[in-house]
Image (cartoon, rainbow, N blue to C red):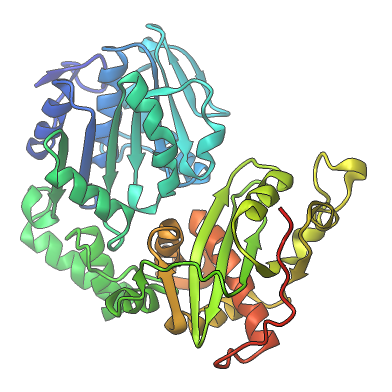
Length: 445
């Protein structure tokens, strides 16, 4: 039993962890700083982390964050979510009112009387959050989070001695998989993988029924994949609705995700997805014979077009063209005379080619056609490779079907940039064995 100042619904005021939750609790309580817990659905992942945050916030005064993949989903999943057993909001169970100095519903923020604070945030706008730097950070559903968020926040926690707790089900062998392997092999990290067959949360009959119900509702293939992913924590289970997962898995199997060098004898094509509220993603491509080489990807948040263009032109590349969507004609905030971003770009040394207008699905199909001819730099395109494998359709829980509409998250920024490249090249030539590069130009630095 662990005494905590929370859970007003309990007559004893004591929160009791499940047996499989005790090892990581004890690790953190003893001063552990990094933990990766891959637990099946309904294993109490978020409830555990809320309880730990309540405890930690009263051991050390500081800021604590509960981070979901998207800020838009955080309110539904955590802030407004109701505990099914007690009919009380999750946050009210974890952080009772008598401990709080204030609660801000607008930005999902709680200030405790002891001076600590806790907030629900999203990894989709991670670099706009660093005002009060966290000393404790939970990444919920980290397999779906933008991996750049951890790269950005890691130095902060290292400097202030804070902890990070990663909880998730699996979504293929992506950044969560690599982090889990690191945690498993590291002496100072905690790691556990918990299948529903071993936790005691469900009986064998429960799991048989759940699998049958999944197959009945979603069909045998999707139902099996969802069950293996959500209940068996399988790293190899197919990601339901992923548009390019099969093609990217084939690329990895065939050794096309490898060390890919820039060829200075050949020009480079860039494709841009220009974000305003979202990230801007730039991919760098070279055509080498019949191959298409993805040699680099860059991602920016809250960065001006001028700075991004300077970064691109500093690279030692000879450029053939730069591809952008139609929204390049949107006015650049802060530019002289509120001119368009296209006009601003021309003044800074880049002439954009506007990608043809095609539906999202046409763009998805166009890039799928190119992937078998692509080689990807694992050194400079790591996040893009993960995004291509995870870019997926919306899942309609009510109807039990996958839509044709992609989920709008961090993966879509990488995918959109790739789509613009694909539709432009497929519209302008047939990707024969050679392309005439006689009109290439080297961008001025």
